[in-house]
Length: 250
Image 1 (cartoon, rainbow, N blue to C red):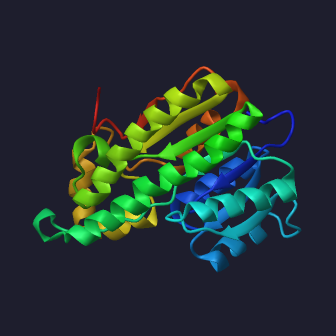
Image 2 (cartoon, rainbow, N blue to C red):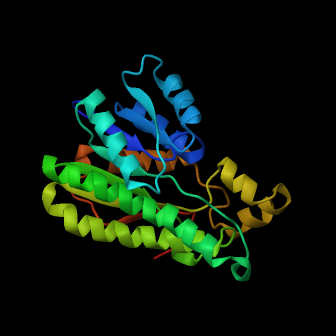
Image 3 (cartoon, one colour):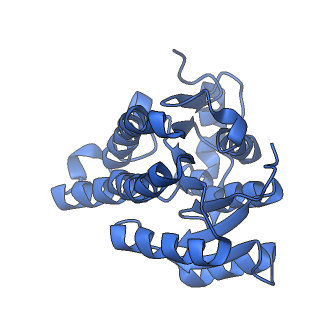
C-alpha cells in the first residue's frame, strides 16, 4: 500500500543482506527511508543508490546497542523529513557455535545486541509515536526463536525468542495510542547469510527437510513488512507472521 503522504521509515541493519532488500521494498512502496547500519559507509552506498539527491533516502550510522544512537537518528530524521512513522528492527548478529562451546560473555553480547537492540529502538521510537498518536513497528524475528534453531547458535535463537516476547509487550502497551507492533519470523531465506551458514554440499539435504522444498524468497518477506508498516494494518498487532516453508506449523 502506498501512503497518501510519504511516511518515513527507520531501518536498522539496512546496508546489506535482507535489511537492504527490505529497505528497497519500503522505498519502492513510496516511503522515505533512513538507511541505518553500524557500517556507515555501506549505509551511505545504499542510500545513494536509492536517491543520490538524498530527498527520499539518507544514511545514518547506528549501533543498536546504544539507545542514544536511536535518539540521535530519530532527531536527524525529524529534522530532514518532518516526522517518522515506521521502525523496522532488522539488525542482528549471528554466531553459529555449538551449545556447549558458547562462552557466557558471548551469549550475553548476542542477547544484548539482538534483543537489547529491539528493546532500545522500540522504546525510543515508541515514546515518540505515542506523542504523535501513530506508529508502525515491525521486528524481524526468526524460525530459530520458535524451534530452537538448527544452523544458528543458541544465543541467536534465544534472542529471537525474546524479540517475539518483546513484540507482544510493546504491542499491548502501545495499542491504545495508534501504534502497532508486529514480528515477522522467516525460516531460511535465500540470502548470503544462509548460504554462508549452510555449505553448498549440505544445501540439498536442508532443502529436502523443508516441506515446500525451497528457501524463502526475501522479496516476499519484505512485502509482508511493507504491508505491516502501512496505515491499513491498523487492526493487527502483537502478531508473529511465520514465513518458513512449513518447517514450523501452529
